[in-house]
Image (cartoon, helix red, strand yellow):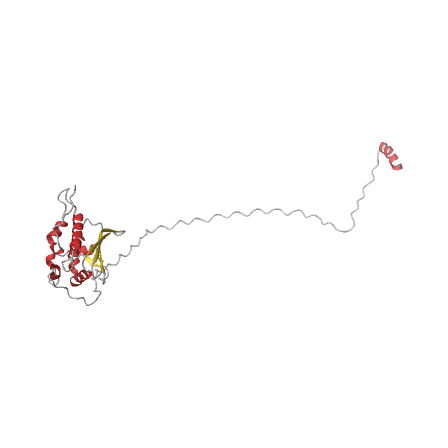
Amino acid sequence: MVAAPDYGNIQSCLDVGDDTIAEALSSARSMNDPSPRKKALALLERMAEVASPNRGAPKIMIVLAHMAGRDWLDGELVVRLIGDDELAVLEVMVDDGLTVQRMLGPLRIDVPFAEFRRALAVQPDLVLPLLVDGEVEERRVELRSTAQSRRDSLPPSLSAISDSLLPFLSGGGRKLPEIISSAPPSIPKAPKRPPPLPLRATRAAQPPAPVRPPRPSRPPAPSRPPPPVRPAVSGGEPEVRRYKAVSLPPHLRDALEPLKKK
């Protein structure tokens, strides 16, 4: 059975150092050890649980910066922080290019959102390779990792934090200087290269189609002879034809005599 990560020894975000982060992100040594993904999320949950004002809560963003370049992430890491003067809310998501899936949160952090906003304004390198997406607003900020930012930068070490931020993270009572603008300028993103022009497909020269010879025309049909011309019938007197008298034999004359008498 895989053992659950135990960070009960952490009583404050100030207790988290480079060794703690390295151990949380290290590979499992046996089948019973939890995965680095599970250990990292458990560490974030513990830090959000014990966070308090002016006690190193921005270290949560350093842990997220170390998570951004891990190969067990199925895409780009997206971190969203919103809040007000009393608390902040953390969401951790993964964008694979098609969908955005939530890994952790929303987690309540009982620390004013201004602590995270001021930490980003004083030392933007605190969250590399995460970059500010848009602007650091008064009550909202979104961080995102890209392939180029992961290649060009390394996550920060707690020992490399500037002197102006150390008193704030160590709880020495010194506060960060006030920000002149309510919306500090965002970290410039690397310019995107224009997409390559599409290659035009070259077609091989095709031989011209053969020209078909014209079809032979049909010979003309033989002309028919004209119909015979009939003589026109005139409208005058009918033609009278005369025939020669024919003499009848005697037996016929004798037979016709009774008819003549009638």
